[in-house]
Length: 318
Ligand SMILES: *Cc1c(COP(=O)(O)O)cnc(C)c1O
Image (cartoon, rainbow, N blue to C red; front, side, top):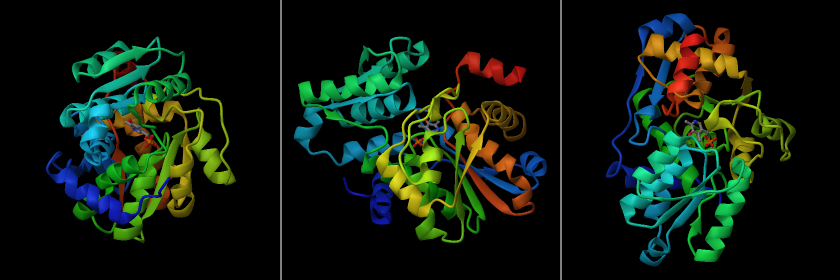
């Protein structure tokens, strides 16, 4: 498996200009005052499917030839990876199968069906669905799109950081949420090229620390997955993003699920922004170390906004 380089991100960036307008990057006076720093938010919650992953899906499908497109794609996901691949497949006219757990969130299942994908509800948890999706790929010839070990996804999602750094240079630190690690790996590749003095800092839930513990320890380890934050809910680390993060990530923080809920609330009340839990994790990470960045310019990737009604009710009760 090839490791993506900055040249792959630059190529993805060119390709995506025709497919997705740049998302906004702003900072907000009330949030700046609360944190005590100038906090730029990269608004990936403003993507057509509500999350940054669509950059990766489009980049991957754009690289397919006609035969590969005709064979189609298959992916496993509890949410945003599914919508990214289904959206890209619809755009390029490729058949798409998505595997979700039997108890999948009905709103996310409906979103995938609305994008025209075939939905297979099989498996108890995400890790079971991955096996089902890989099997369907072998049986049908469809390309199995892994949610982490896929270079095109890393190159694609890294373009969010290119856009951000063009708008907001001289950032002291960029905070990125981590599940499989594609987002953080892409951000680190972009920053290493465009803003080598910017610290890139991963943030994961302390209730599902597989990527964090693997990064710190230098070997891939599984960990219990007890987080309620869907987009960063993984029990296993992914080899390719781990390799890139090991080389280029400057630090990696753990935050509690309750701190993530508090950060979601802060985005709602101080930045006019509806984030899902994973989309607020980066701000929770910044909040935990805010004294270190007092008075400086920093940035957080608001990776997604697909919060269910129940989740929003939880945020407002917190
Ligand atoms: C997938 C996802 C993440 C985590 O990204 P990885 O590339 O898997 O580390 C964070 N936020 C949202 C909204 C996501 O959908």
